[in-house]
Every structure is written in structure tokens, then in C-alpha cells.
Length: 338
Ligand code: P6P
Image (cartoon, rainbow, N blue to C red; front, side, top):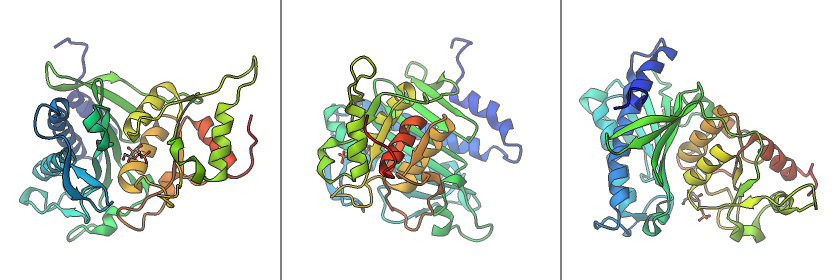
């Protein structure tokens, strides 16, 4: 291996010094997640060649049809977290209730993992990028079995968060609260290698990501913000670019690299927003804030929302700080188009 290449494992060990109180548990937990991501990546990459495409004929608590790969990915992450021994509870988009990891090695594990094992999976059958999103908390309770109260913590309490994007290449991007780093999977050695050190999102951008098919039912502020994005002033300003993949991880990852905003507001079908707070909005908000961006529900910081239920949803405006502030101004009626 090229001596200049740093693997995820080497990086995690190097950064362990950032957490003097940690005895390596978080490092091992991150490595467990990376192992499962490599296994899921192998199946995602050969989807279409094996009988793993398409629907399973079941629905999850969200009422969404489960894809075979959704369930496969969920099983892989739960298995890796169970055998790794550092996690005591998993909260997954694919499971109605929290999953207690009661294996012998995990009985006094102190970490909670909230996960969307395969986000955007409706895109799998048409070969569009999909992702895994994870959020890690330390349990609050100090004795006995961890419980739902240990899971329902504010986003500000996260000790780590990350995503895997299974796209033209497979990347793992994560933060432990000390910046954001991106690792690209090198299939020739089966390792995630540091490729995007200290990722920072541009302060401003000209890409907006939103499903405009829901325009009629958008809040007025969102409609005005979209018109603001489309304004063309001869000589001074070109219209923004609209990019919407239908896979949150892919849209937010592109905006992280190039600058931009991703918005999933309230809609007729999702009056409380579509994206889930614990395993989609909070982890992506932690990452984007750590990269210098902003994430709100249109008025309040995502990370400050007090969770009440496991699968609760919220509207989300996330990306370049100036764009999110502008969208919030429209939502609060304090901005004019143009
Ligand atoms: P719509 C995928 O189901 C997802 O949770 C996000 O990844 C994506 O951005 C959004 O929902 C797409 O939703 O309603 O635009 O198809």
C-alpha cells in the first residue's frame, strides 16, 4: 500500500488521543460500522446480478415497502454491532422498536446507535446512489439495562455521526465533534482510505435540492425561497441550479462538497416533514455543522430538538450556512425574493 495512504483504522487510532477518557470503545464501534458498510457495499455493487433487487413484500413502521436490500443492510449492521460488543441498543429505521443487544460481550456496553441502514433504497433498482446514516450516543443511565430514554437524546448529545454513500465510489464520512473527514473505499485492498481530510462546506452556494413536485403544498416561505433561487438579474445574478437525487445522503454529500441547500419541508403527504429526526436529520445536521454549515427545521436548530418518539419526523433545511439563513428568513417572512 502506498505509504502516503492512511486507512480509517489508522486514522481512528491516531484520533483516539482526542478522547482521553475513552478506552478505545468508540474506536472499535466505528470500526464495526465500517466492516458492515463494506459487506453492504459488496451487495449494493452487485445488485441486479443476484436476487437482491426489488421489494420484499413487507412494510416497515414508516409504512414504506421494504426492499430486500433494506432488510439485508439492516441485518448486517445489527450483526456487526452485536458482535462488536460496544453497543447496548440499536434504533433502526427498519425496526418498530429499539433492539436490545444483550449478548454476553455487550452487557455493559455504553453506546447507543441510531441507524438508517439503507436510505434512498427506492433508487436501488435504477442504480442511483444510496446511503447508510448513523448516529452514536453514550447511554445516559449508569446502571441496569439501557432503555428508550437512553435513545431519545437531543442531537447535541451525539458523540459521533456519519454516513456511507454507495455511489460512483463508496465513501464513509464521519465526525466525532472535531471536524469532518471522508474516506474512500479502495476495493483493491478492502480498506476505507482518507481522501477528504477536514471537509468544510462552502459558506454559500447555488445548488438547491428539493422535490418541487410537492410545490403546491409547500409553506409560503419555501415557495418564496424557491422563487428567490430562480431569480435572474441581467448581469448580476444567474438562477441557481436545481439538483434532486431523491437520496438524502447523495444530495447532502454533493452540497457538502460544492455548496448548496437540501430542503425537505412539510408537505401534504408529510405534514410533520418526512425525514426522521434520530437517524437521518440529527446525524446529518451534526456532520454539516461540524463542516461549517447549518441545519434547521425552518426556525430552530435541528440538534436542539427534544426527541419524544423513536421515529418522529421533522422538516429540514440543511447545507451552506448563508443559504440556510436565507431560507429561514423567507420562512419567517423577513426576506423578499430577488
Ligand atoms: P421524496 C428516501 O426515501 C428519503 O428518505 C431521502 O433519502 C430522500 O431525500 C427523500 O426521502 C425523498 O423523498 O418524497 O422526494 O421521494
